Every structure is written in C-alpha cells, then in structure tokens.
Length: 379
Image (cartoon, rainbow, N blue to C red; front, side, top):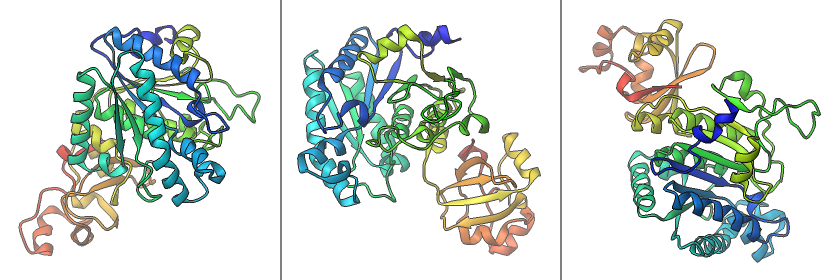
C-alpha cells in the first residue's frame, strides 16, 4: 500500500486531479524572521511542474504573523497578545503575498491571494462564494494562496491553525488530496521527541480513538499554532470529504519530490464522498448546541433515519431553527451533526415526547423531526 502513495494522492500530476498544499510557518520563515526563499523556490518549482502537467493546485500558506513580527520588532514572534498578532499579520501578509507572487511569477504563473475567516467557511452562503472563487481561479490557471485573515480574526472566531483551514479549503475546492508540509514527517505512535521507541505510522485507513490518542498537541517549532492534534482534525475533515491527506516533512528542499522518492510520511485514506452539503456540515468547527440521545435513537441515526423527539434525553446551548447542532450518544461521543428544525426553547419542551404529543405542547402543527436525515451527517 505504501508503494502506491503516488497514485492515491494524485502524483504524478494529471488534469483530473486537484491538490491542496499547506506550508507551515516554521518551514517558510527562518528563526530570525526572514523568508526561507531558496527552500520556497524549490517547492514552487515542484508546484509549477505539476501545474504544467495538468494538476490543479492551491496553496494554504502560513507565515504572515512571523514575517510581520520581525518587521515590527515584536516580541515572542508577534504572539504575545492578540493585538500584536493582528498587527503583525497586517504587515506580514503583504510580504508573504509578494514572495509567493514573485516566485510563482518566475514560472509564468499568476498568484491569487485569498484571505478568509472562520465565518467565511462556517456560513453556508459565504462558503459557497469562497468555493466558487477558488474554482474559478484554479480553472483560469492561477494558484490561489490562501491564509486566515489574522488581522481581523479573534481568539473566539478563528481557525487557530492552517492545518484545519487547509482541509476546509480542500473540501470547498473539491480536492482529491491535501498535503500538509510539516516540521515532522508524519504521525508517530508516541511523541518522537520524548519517546525513543516511537514509530512512524505510514498508513491510516480509518481514524479511530486509538489513532487520535497518538497525537501530541505541541508545535515542535514554537512558531506555528498547530500540533499533531490539529493535523488529525484536518485529516478527519479531508478524508470525510473524499480527499486523501498526507503529513510529510518539509525540512528538505523539493519536499514533494523527496517524499515521492522516500515514501516516508503518513497517508490518511479518503472515505467515500457524501455530497457537498453534508461535507460542509461535517467539516464545521463551530456548533450552536448539543443533543444527547438514547441507544435506540443512536441506532436509528446510524441506519439513516431522522432524529425524533422521543429519542432525545438532553439538550444544551442556545440555538435557532436552521443552526448547526451536534448529536451525541449516552457516552458523550458525537455521532452526528445537523441543522436544527426547532429552536432550543421549543426543543427543551418536547425532548423525550412522542410525536403525537408535540402539537399539544407547542400549540401548533409540529415538524416531523428535530433533525431531519436530509440535513444530517454521521460523524
């Protein structure tokens, strides 16, 4: 299976494949705050070769805060305060975009900047707008360079790392594969910095609790914001949307070629595609409320049925009709996500009740389900 990595991830390039490549801060920016231009030029040359062969490519690039912090003389890489990070991002994003534009321009490729916030991809209409823009730019032969708009993002409304952003961009672009270039060469059975017996996991066919338990939340460089936890969350989003995801080392020049030659990395295999709307639901990072269901309702959901009031044992959160809510089993495991058919105040009145009793409790004609199967995705 490992020998087939090139086929599974869309290498070598073909006109029918679409690839998202994420570049972390620690790879793009040196410890002194300068751009690692020679390394980045080697990556851009690889992207240009694949694009010229017909592969469609988009990049998710970190680095704005680190670059801006150097120019502004900010302590702690610009991450001492939220205000410092926002200011550093505003200055650094200009420099970051210019570097990408120059290097891609050397190969006759137009670079397109896209700055997005969490809300742009969590709101359905704005998500579709972003997806349409990505599709048009890629179709025109440009390479979009995407980053979170850290100059306006706050701690409460931000992705917080570009691993999950890359997966969401892959989802929006309907990509076949997402590659996370990292300062570590894949998922290990334990933290390789502290456990000499840790072993690289070359292939993950299905993300389960055992696999997730291998993750370590720390970022090795101290420069970025994502650790292995965020990468596994990205893998859940990408593979659930039908895209393979690979974590590979970016510590070498021409990292994609090096990976193809060494086959060293971790590949997460895609699941079957669910449809664009359900992919968007599954990939959301924010929800407005939670429902807890009994064993019978959990079984019914897994059989593809809607969620009726009788099977719900508890509700929490303040949500309105149409908001996204999570559905958990009695053990607290989130098993589904969907759009609420009732607001939280009405839901509290009818949980555990039979459908024929709902009309009397609410004083009107009830909807058939609290979450309908057409607006629900299993997780």
